Each structure stands twice: as C-alpha cells, then as structure tokens.
Length: 415
Ligand SMILES: *Cc1c(COP(=O)(O)O)cnc(C)c1O
Image 1 (cartoon, rainbow, N blue to C red):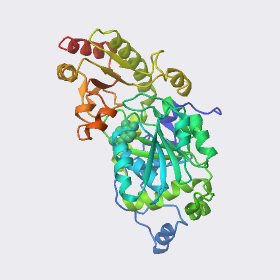
Image 2: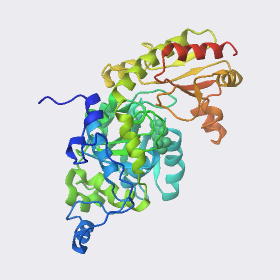
Image 3: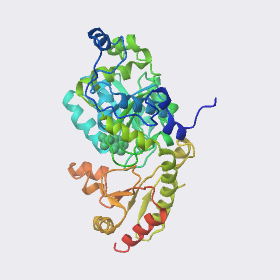
Image 4: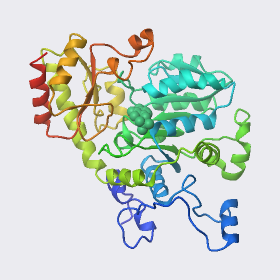
C-alpha cells in the first residue's frame, strides 16, 4: 500500500511495526527506573550521545518514546517530548524560550492554570507577558517588541469559545522572526493541525481527547522542525542549532528543562494514552455529532438563556471554525447560561448521568460551574472578567445522545 494512511488509522497503528516487541500490538510498559549496559564503554558512549540508548527514566523510556513518535506524527511535527501533565508541557516549552528580561505575547483568553503561570509565576523570573485579543490581529501586531520571544495561542479558547486565525497569526510571527506556539488541547489534531497552518510548536494536555477515558494524566510538546533559530534574536540557541539545526528547540527543551526540572511522564500513563488513541477516530466522530445535537437541544430550551457553541451558523467564529477544522466538526465544548448562580447549582445537583467534575474531552459528558470552582480563588475583578456566575461549561461525551438530552431535560425541570 503506497498511499499515506489516514489520521484515524495512524492513531491505531503508527510505529508499532518499527519495534521487535514479540508481536505486541501495543507498546510494552517499560517499568524500570534505569537500563543496564553490558560494558562501561557502552554506558559512557550512551551518556555522550554517540550511542542512542536509554539510561534513566527521567531522561527517556521506551514506552514514552513510542508515544512521542506517534504524537509527533499525528500533529504533523518532526519530534516530540511527552511530559507528566499538560501544564508540564506548557511550562517546559515556554521556559525553553524565555530568559529573565524577555517578553512574550499571549492570547488574553487562556486556560486557567496557563493564565496563572503566565501572569503570576513568570513575573517572579522577570518575564513579561503581553496579553492580546486573540481575534484582533492588529492588537496582536501592535504588541510585538524587539524583546518578544514568541506568540502563544489556544486553538479554541475556554470558556470564551473563540477561534483565532492561526494561519494569519503564524504569518505575523514569522514576519517578525518569532515562533508561534499553540495549545491544541481543545481541538485535538483530529480536528485541527496547527503545524499545517504554520505554527512552530504545539503543546497538549493528552489527559483530554488523546486518552478519552479519563484514566491518565499527560502532556506533549511537538516541534514542527521548520523554524529558523539561527538569528540574532535567538543567539542563545546557537549551540543547539549547531547540534540539531531546525530541531534546536525540542533538543534544548529536552536537554535543559525536561531532564533538569524532572517533568517526566510515567510510562504506565503513556501506555494508557496509546490505548486511548486506538479509539480516537470513532470517539471524535461521535463527540462532534453529539455536540451539535446537545447544543441545539439547549438552545431550544426555554430555561436556557444563551448557548455559546461555534457550531451555530450565527456564532462570530463559525466561518473560521469551518475553515480551520476542515468541515470535520466544531469541537465538543460549549457554554450556556441560566438565570443565575442558583439555577446553575440546581441544574448540576439534579443531573444523574452527567458528571460534575473538572475535566474535559472525556468520553463521559461533563459539566462544571467555573465561577464557583476553577476561578474561585481568583481576585474578584479578574473572576468577573474571565467567568460569569450564570455560566455552565459543558463537555459533550459519547454516550447515546438521547440519554444526554434526557438527563439535561429532567434536571432543567427543577431550575
Ligand atoms: C487541561 C488543559 C491543560 C492542562 O493540562 P493538564 O494535563 O491538566 O496539566 C492545558 N491547556 C488546556 C487547554 C487544557 O484544557
């Protein structure tokens, strides 16, 4: 067979035949902290990098390596590093690019922990983040300075549900000789591959759609391998460029940050993620149709005041979603409003199937009231800007759609 295989097929098969694992169709879990070597010289050559082999789990592990190769392929990148969590991937990727005194530019609409990391924690290290409206290209362009090291975007913002134009933002970044990094967690590469639109680095929480079962935590950084780091702005990358050329970024991330901050993924979690990937294609198809049906059900319900779902043709980002997601769907996330916080609490408390918990992209339908949970410890002003007491966030799962809508319908009776 000569034609390239489809995404759904590669999510199941990619890479397994490259290994001699006694005919196993899934990677074995290499549950070993370290690997022995038969001679002192061999171990020495492995440490010096002359001989590619595994040494110690914090550095590399065969199960993790397998997942890295599969995810790099699924994201159309050249190399990847898997990490203990999505936040480990994001912090590693950013820290690899940033030094004290540097600036970077990020979407003003960010995942909550990413927001805290960028605006609060990085400040301690003398790093400045400038926030820009992800839908306003002029606003983004106006904030690029000669200290800007990269632009950071999310494919679909949460809970705003905005879809930035990644192609245009990548062009803008490249005109300024800086890379574009994208958190693609909410879309997944099944729906959108930012590298094919020009992004240079993709980060993920694999905890979400890649796994789907909600049993494993993980993250990944994928390097497109096309950014030119051999410039004055990135002169600190020179030793890594010399060794790895266009793969300087992922090499530096691995050598400096991953290994020394110890952000290693547990191989058991990598195995569970591979297991999840086997069903990704069918799960995503069901997610997409269920989301449209659940959103429509909610919009038509008299107790629901509004629904924010990019699948609706009157949504401001609908056309961008159609273009950027190649007509495959609109994601599984939506938010909706009820009269007040009490109504939101009554709905959540009367659901019997849909789970009230802090996760998304799971095969199970999930609901959360972000204002009183995820944002509860944010300063009042910020909380009011980022969330809304009348808002519920909904992640549509892959159960039978009639059971999802039936549960919503019964609980809405009590509101
Ligand atoms: C969940 C999530 C993260 C963080 O991932 P963890 O695996 O929980 O560390 C980052 N970005 C987005 C968009 C997420 O949804």
